[in-house]
Image 1 (cartoon, rainbow, N blue to C red):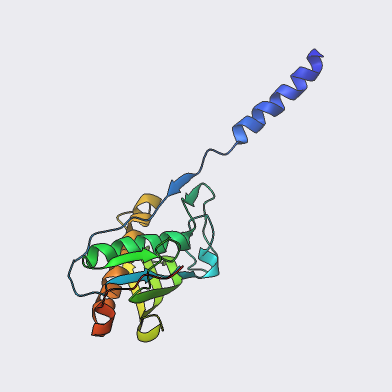
Image 2 (image 1 turned 30 degrees about the vertical axis):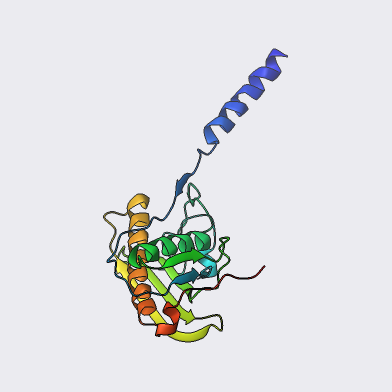
Length: 202
């Protein structure tokens, strides 16, 4: 019995040493921008589309050499698409103080005056260490989703360091810059988008 214990104990200790620590969890945050009136009364942010390589729990550091750089110990606190939509809605609400901004995933049941659709092709570091946000934006107005404006955006933010907290902060900054551009598109909509929304019948 003692011999068996002596054989098993080293194996248990080795497994304990190899046990992975809890992963570090990160989230994007809203950043302040220039606030101005003139936007639609009710704005819905549709769930953003993501390039497949971004749609994962792990944070993608870069894909600059045809190989993804990941760290299993660093993860997003929620699905990236949901998080981008939620933070973009917060950014827009701050920039458009006269508008009600909500996400597709929420429970708001009014017909939106305008809908923001976002397709993200890239959101990671380039070879120079800058965060690159490459996205297509569509702004549609009214219940009929009449196309009002589309835009291609390529935004660059230099992180304070290569550490993940600073990289995530730079990603939040890039999303804030995107919100600045989207807010301008929303203010440019025709006057009929400024009328109050009607309650949706259940």
